[in-house]
Image (cartoon, rainbow, N blue to C red):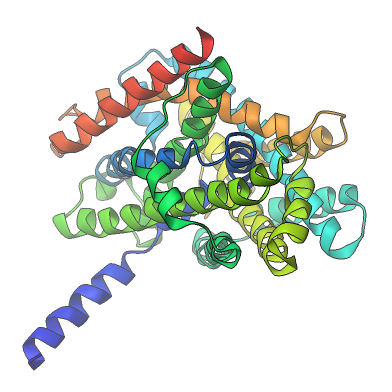
Length: 423
């Protein structure tokens, strides 16, 4: 290879790795403890049946997240602000409240899962860890600036590799796994349709739509574009960088989904452990079957992604409500300037901590939250599709037709799955 070719390769590699940002964080946050729980339920209860869902959802998740990223990049504002230009404000308020409630339920389930994992490693009460984790995450979200939070979240994303390693330690039959990946077994019963809705809802989730677009705005503010006019529009190179970022983040997210379903199918389901009540039970069941190292990887990964996902959940609701009501917002803003924004984050965390002291089953709670997201998501996708097609809102830079078609197909798929679950 000559020096010119080497230079070109290095330039492309630098472009690729330098693009990692909101897309990678958002993709990793998609595999939060509630997502891990939902994938574990899918593998434990249905075996390898839903492996194909990991392959199916990747292009749709990538298209949706890129559409949301583009909205933030070219309009200079978040998703809620863009939606308000297409729909009545009252409709947006109702959805933002629903988003806050669903996210808070999700945070509660995530804290419970993290606390269970910490209790397994230390022997201390899970209730202590729920409060400790909630307080630490809320404090960090309020006190640290955006670039500090983004840097920390990128490192937490690495913990997701634990699930890939755990699967390889078990030694799956790859021929059987690939068969279920590329030859779909479509749902027939109410229960199977409900599982598909939960998988779609925890993968293509409304909170990720709002987080992605808002983080694009935060990135631009961090680069010195502090006014709306300065943030409007995006260069071809900026869009290309984000496309790499989103592609890697969403691929990584779905890869982890694949390996969690595979791991739990080959351990729990194969040994007739088809009903799991807590994340602790799911992790402990792996130890005698897959080995203690696999169990430890699963548990450590659960803790890491919890720290990654909870700021995303509380923050996305805060961004949506702030844009809807015109509050000052942003993780770079001091508390005194954006009190309402940070109050939403703190309120969501406090309610989630209280939720953990109730008798509600955390695995059921996270599964329900995934189904709620699966039902809400297609309605939001209709709004996103309307926005990314509007040249005026998108400042003359609407999403390409391929992205528009992909978002439209994802919308129809999620509506169809929801109808299948109810009927």
